[in-house]
Length: 285
Image (cartoon, rainbow, N blue to C red; front, side, top):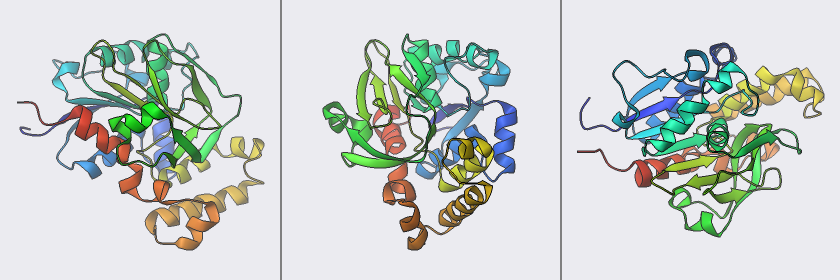
């Protein structure tokens, strides 16, 4: 297609996790990310690759990273600090995408795998799992000034699910935001021609996606003390799905403390919209 921006989406999940998420009412990570980006620009030309299963050489034949106007990395159920094939498959691609000079955005896993690829450190958070709504995420001075957060409140909430976090950012990274759970909720690398923006939360997610993830994690969330039992988990998942379908259900939004930062797509997607506008920019001539 001509006169459209070309975006590569790197799906960090394994096939079986994506299909389980689909069966529970969610989306495969790559498809969900594509849907979010298309809310911002329906005309995008999107290619999805899956290095967890297909390895680092997963681009279509004859396609180069520099053929794209932007590259987005999804979340994943993998742990970036574990040396298993599905992780090791992605490290060289993470480094190559950022070193290509093409603007790159990473959500959650996307930020973590890039951090490790560039010498940073990722760990299991000592605060446990942050899931549902990440609260009181605060911009620092660099965050307030950065175009990723143009139009964003200094303190905001976001849809999130993670147990791991970046504990040591890569050399040259600038931290933009954090909260009490994870002191690095966003960083950028914009030195030496790099164009990477990363966040620990999921601006691309919907409430329906979180409902599916509650169901997928199931007993692990009960064992962590986040739900009393399976019935409580299912009630919350059902209510979040209802709120996804009808965001004007003020009773449910109030019950779960979900504000418009997480509820309204135009506010959830602000970081991705700013990436498309200020980093990816216009169609190349």
